Structures are given as C-alpha cells and as structure tokens.
Image (cartoon, rainbow, N blue to C red; front, side, top):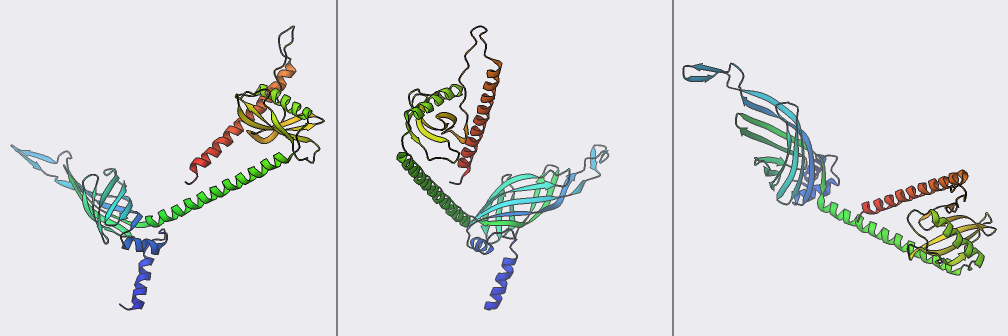
Length: 344
C-alpha cells in the first residue's frame, strides 16, 4: 500500500469514529494497543420469541393419544439496547440494558465479562449466556439464542458507539487537574496567611484604646452577651484593644480580643460616637455591624411584669439575632459543602 493510500485509509478510519469520542486519535491508538478504553453504545434489538401454543382447542384426545394441533407460534420482539464496555488489554467487562416494545418480552439488565482479540469478543453474562460479539470503537453487535421450558428467544443486538474515553489518558488529565487544584489551594492559603500576617502587623502598629473606650467595649460585650444563644462571655477577658484607622463617617472604631465559654478566643469591633457604642461586629458574624442587644429588662416591683414596649423591643432584637444565626448556619453549611465537594 502506498503512503497516499495509507493516509486515505487512516482518514476513513477516523471518520467512522462517532462524534462523541473525545481525542479520537488518542482513543483509537489506545484501543489498537490494548489500552484501557471505555465505550458507550446505543442501538436496538430485534428477534423472535417462540412459545408452545397452549390455547384452548390446541389439544385433541383420540383414545389414549393426545395430539397437539397448534404446535408453536413465533412472536416478533424488538426494543432498545444500551451497553457500557471497558476494554483493558485482552479482557473486556461491561453492563448492558434491554428495553422491550412488547408485553411478552420485558427486557432487563445484565453484566458481562470476557476476552477480546482484535474486534472479536467472547463474552459470558451473569446469567451464564455465552456469545461472540463484534466489538470495536464504532459498533457492538451479537446474536443470542436462549432456550427454556416451552420457549425460545432468538435476537440480534446491534449498537453504535456514542462516546469513548481513553481511561489512562483520562486518569492523567484528572491527576493534572488535581495537582493544579492543590497548587491553587496552596497559593490561596499562602495568600491568606500573608494577608493575616499583614493585618496582625497593622493591629500591632495601631495606638491602644483609651481606658474609657476599653470600658465601653467591655460593657457592650457584657450587655450584648445577655442575648447570646449558645456562648457565654468571660467577664474581664477583654484585652489588646486598639483604635482602628478612621472612617469617613466620623465614628471611632475600636477592636479587641475577648474569651467566652471558659477561654475560647474571639474578637470584636465596636463603632463609637461620642464614646458610646453604636454597633458591634463579632468574629463569627462579620457581615454587618449590628446594634448591641439589650439585657433582660428589670421587672416592675408592683406587677412583676416587664413593660409591653420593652417586650416588643426585645422580640425585635431576638428576631434580628435569629435571622443572623440562620444566615450564618446556612453560610457555614455552604462553605463545608464546597470543601467536601472540592477536587482532592
């Protein structure tokens, strides 16, 4: 064969590979060399179901002799056929599924394994059926003859390839993607560490808050903690309070550390106007600066009940905190879900 004829034959061979096959040349080379290739086929099934006719009147008794007048009858069957096959060297394994257009034949699924030589596969399925199939990157075909008590099913299954993947190449690509994702995560972690170091350096350079500012911050935390659902503020734990860079609205922002639940660390920022705390931002609720929640109202000495106005205010504050808690729980779930589903 001349070089030109070889080129034409190669082009024709590639043209027969379905459009769903990624990197057709790579897949074809892997299949020819006995590499690991996964192919999906879709097509149809047709055949006949031969059954013994047991209709009324099919039997005639003459003396002691029974005569079968009707014999057997053939019922056409047809349907769809789907197969997913993995070729690995000389071995082949896969699954297939039959869908039937007839009520007398229900179809079903099976698994199979066997050996491959070129484009011929000798296969055994999980029901013990043995058959020889034409198996290539373009088609998967075989005939099956299954006999049982009172029936015989003969059918031809033919399907064309709709997609094919070189599994070795896919593994290589996946490994490269995982390495790239790991490098990206490491770069993001390094950047976050640098940003945190720069932020801590900035905090260390900020002037310390005044005694009155520190007292106002601690009192705000103590008052706000009366409405906390889960945590308990450690009184006297506020420390390292500094004045943050000035903002355009003229309010002063102070930031300090504190502990809760017997030593768990946290931080809080408060915005002050004329020395009075206007709102606070906690380490675990950083989305907005919210008002300080009120402590439980003193009861009226005569009636022992809180005022209606205060109860309404308290209910509004609790609703605000409830929404914040639900949003934080949702955000935490989404962050964890993204971490669990990120490529390793």
